[in-house]
Amino acid sequence: MTSLVPQRLRTVGPRDQLVRAVLVLGALVLVVAVGRLAVTLPGVASIIALAVLAVGLTAVQPGIIPVAVLPLLLVVLRIGGGGVDLSLSDLALAAAAVPALLLAKRPFSPGLRAVLWASAAYQFATLITVANNPYAANAVEWGHAWVMVSGALVVGWAVGANGHARVGVRLLTGTIGVLAAITVIEGVVHLAQGDLSPVYPSFPYSMHKNFAGTVLGLGAVMVYARPAWAGINRRWSSVLLTFMVLGVLFTQSRQAIVGLAAAVFVLVLRSRTDRRRSKLVLLLVVPMVLFVTSLVQDQVQSDNRFNSVLQRLTWFQDSMTVWQTDPWFGVGLRWWYTDRFAFQFQPPNAEIEVLTSAGVLGLIAFLALVLVALRVAWRLDPLYGSLAVAVLVSRFVQGQFDLFWSAVQASLPFVILGICLGAEAFARRQDDGDASMHDDASAATTGPAASPAAQGRPR
Image (tube, rainbow, N blue to C red; front, top):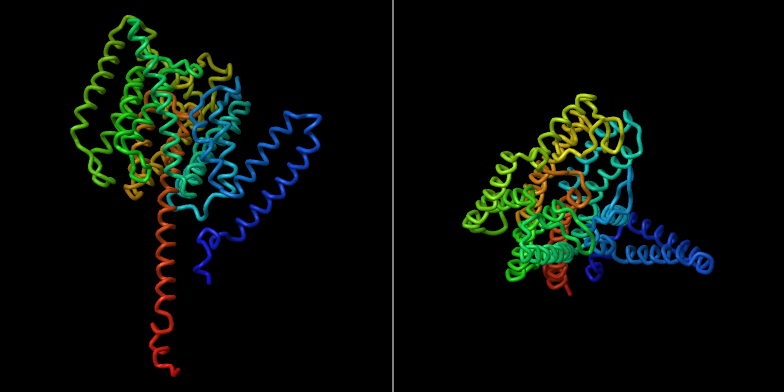
């Protein structure tokens, strides 16, 4: 009889039942609160009603909230300021991480656990600088970094492990595709006006060229990787890839171009991959790298001491001055929000930022996190791992030339890694379930006749 029970019902354990019971009880409490506040505080009642709806949807389908917020993870509209400088993407990620963590498919895969432990080690290492340098931005950024890594991983896992990986990747690439179309349209308008300056997308809100460029670069990597399970056909991938690459070029974001080139290089030359990719594409990558090299050389030779290249070199030198204040444990996360130093800038390099903020100890933990994430992605089945490897490589290369711990750019790669890990786990469960049903069906068909003892039994 157990073979007639759906697999998803047979896998609901005591833990899941307890969590769902708590959610139902919480929903009932919220319903009563809505009834009491509907007349006096209708705005608050509306928010609580949405929370009740979210609780109900989560109890029915644990992956629905993480899937629904994926497009919001790309929105950097600011909702805070000063030491508590958060974006809408931060809020959406934190809101999705709670139900994802409570109702995520268990057990976590070994790869996911490895990256989560590496993230916890990094948080422990940076906790020392939080204790040594007590100020609001330091504590806020400590929690923010944990959400951007571990929270993003769990949200991605909830999407993939609940069977929504295809929808999740499509939502992300579709949203980035819209941003690409906006950037290209504005770039064409600038060209028509004879303006060759970088494009800063202004719709639906103002965006920095480096944010738009790096996000479009990550989107181009996702589309080029195009795993079979994502269900993106060749025609659509060609259209999306064209718009995203053009968008990157219009922004003139050099770190995005270099990151895209590095990811394509890894995908083409990697021996373990989900499909063969023509090496001729490297002929298209070379002009992009030469373009970046030319821009850098022009700025190095320029008389403008405040262009982006020379300014970065100055920032690197100033960062070393700050680092020498506390070389082992750092001067605190988001130290540039304080007035303790004459410099107020976020170092445009991942390792230098961590070195100044958390010292040598924090840098060791950060490099360990990077290596563990890359190793886990590299060891995945290429059908799922190629996408994760490409996005992580692209982001870490981008982080050598620009801000790393920055909302979308930091969290998106770990969301995608979580989706890939969850998608592989979901596929394995499906295969195990099909094999189990096949065995049950075979046993039911052969019946007692399959047993030698039964065959010799008198009627």
